[in-house]
Image (tube, rainbow over all chains, first blue to last red; front, side):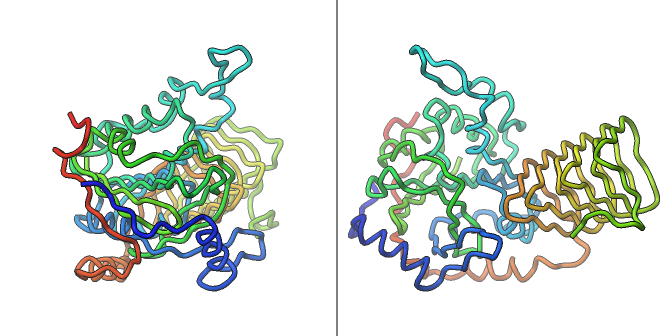
Length: 230
Length: 150
C-alpha cells in the first residue's frame, strides 16, 4: 500500500500558509541578535519516533541536523545520550571538493567523507534523526550516507527522515528542526542549502530497502515524514 | 560577557602551550593548548581566539573558540555562538547558543530527577490514542511489500 495524498495544497496556498505562520501567529519572533524566526509545526512522524525511544534510559540518539540545544535538551531530558553530527555542513566542506570526470567539473570526495564523518562502531545507535538531510545532500553521497547510517544503527533502531514533495519547488529553503516537545517541532530557516532533488515514494523505499519497515506520514508544507525501523 | 577579568588567570592569544595544564584557580584561555587541561573545581573560559586540542576537566567550562577534545564540566558546559567543538561532553548542565558547532556526544550526569516532567509528558502523549497533529498518517508497507526488498 502506498501513501495517499490528501488534498495537495498548491504552491501559492502553501506559501501563503508559510508566511502567515511567520507573520500571523505561532512563530517565535526573531531575536534581537538576528536569529531567524521559528515556525511551529506539529509532527506525527516525530510523535511516533518519540514513542520508540521512551524506554529504557541511556539510549544513544544521533541527530544529523545542525546543533540545536532544544534537541539536545529533549533527548538528554529523556535520559538518553545525544550525539550530534551536522552531515549536511560536513558534506559541503571545501576540502571534499575534487575534480569531476568532465573537464572543469567538480564532485565530492565520497571516500574522504566516509573516512572522516559518521565514524562510529557498527550498531551504535538506538535511533537516528535524519530530518530532511537526504533532499539536500550532494548526489554522490546520498546512497553511501544511507548505507553508513544503516550500519551504525542497531537492529530495530528507529530513524526519522523528512522528504519534500514535488510541490515544494526547487527553491524550497532549508530549515533547521528544533524539538519543542513530543508533538511539536520548530522550523528555523537557514543556513542556505539548495534542494538537490525530490524523491518519489518508490525512490524512498528503494533508498531504504535494507530497513525492515517504513511508514509514511503526509505532513504539512509539502513534507512527507518517514519513520523507518532497521 | 566572559571576557578578561583581572582576578582570573589569563593566557593571551599569542601563547602556545604543549603539555599538561593544571591549576587551582579560574582561567581565561585565549591562546593555544595541546595536551590536557585540568582545573579541578575551577572555571575555564576559552576565548574567541582560543584553540585547544586537549581533553578538558573543570567545574564550569565556557567555550567561545575552537576545541578538539573531550570536555568534562563538573557543573556546566556552555557553548557560545562562535564555539566549535569536536569532542564529547560530560556535564550536569549544558547551554548551547544558536550558531555553535558541535560534533560529538553529550552525556548529562543526573544529580536529581530533572528529566521526569519531560518523560511524563512524552509518556502521556504516547498513551493518547488519537493524534492532534493535522498530518495524515498512512502506514505504507510491510517489509515484504517494499519494492526491491531483499
